[in-house]
Amino acid sequence: MAKRCEVCGKGPMSGNNVSHAHNTTRRRFLPNLKSVRALISGQVKKVRVCTRCLRSGKVAKAA
Image (cartoon, rainbow, N blue to C red; front, side, top):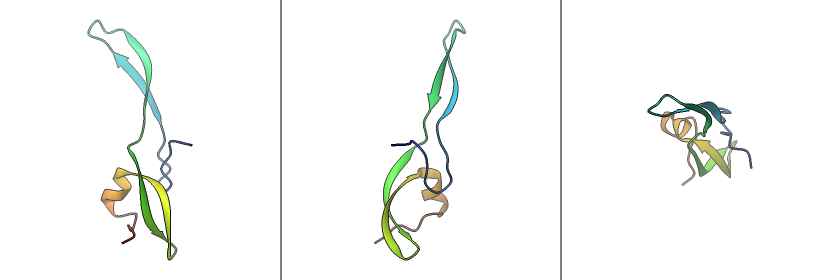
């Protein structure tokens, strides 16, 4: 299962863990995905959506 938002397409990003001694190792930043029942083209469908899309109103939640 892909860690990708089905609305905006946001996926994992990469960066560094930085220790106090400034040693760096690669890490992944995963998007905050929630499984939501949403209205998509008039039908209720279960989708994985990032919290930014939920908060901004890009997804209409089903009642």
